[in-house]
Image (cartoon, rainbow, N blue to C red):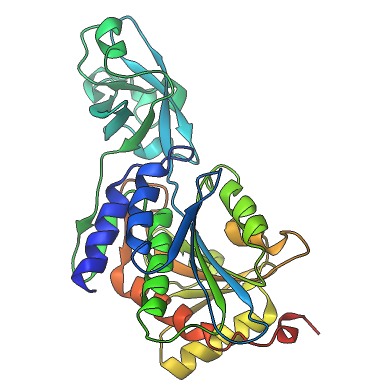
Length: 356
């Protein structure tokens, strides 16, 4: 991966963006794509980049990935300065105990830890139980409520403290790769198209959406405003190349073997076949999965926007979803961007999108 692109990914992941508090990450996205595309921000906070195409009766193609991540919000501070919090999105209480977190106060980041009673003091029946999030608390080292209230406010967003960490090979780990990895791919597609030296044959929109983790909200509103003919959502998907994921239920998906192309009720038949054919022509490795139900992604929102949109999904294999240590392969991100860029050239026939 080129140095500038990797630095963008690092900045994007490092920027806090729990649902409803996405603008630190959106500023990173805006600054990057603003170098090669027209950029605007809507009332929801979605960032919409645009590259006009050439030719008659051009299709409007919208790429979307969500920049919001799971996280927490401050709910209460007790007399001893401990902080009680609620989840933003689907947080697993198994993975929170013992984690360092960052509370993003007004103009200042406050470090804290999620603690619990030492194992020596736990009764045997409690050692294997999961503590509900409502019963977990954050310690910032404050002496009392007054000190805590001088640093943070009720409603302040909270993230895990983990940032991008290289592992072996081209694999990296971080919080928030769901779905900042997808936002990275959208931005890279816009960059590659802009730098190709030729205008695309479609009007291309690249959207970094908000509030996906709490109901696909940014995907709904941005799809309505862009009103695309074709929508391609770039999302993460469960990698099954770890010991505790059942391949019979989730398919055989591996890091480093290319983007994942789903087939199912959210997916337009022509776009599915077009992505498969493009991958073969460009010699891009891909993996296939079956999605016999709604995907739970912004593709859902796009598909039923206005009178309907021809939608597709390009998924990125991800380990340990909704944890502070999500893992991806950088080559999968690069291959996904390459696939989407190549697929744009074949999107010229409006009638082909209509199932027959």
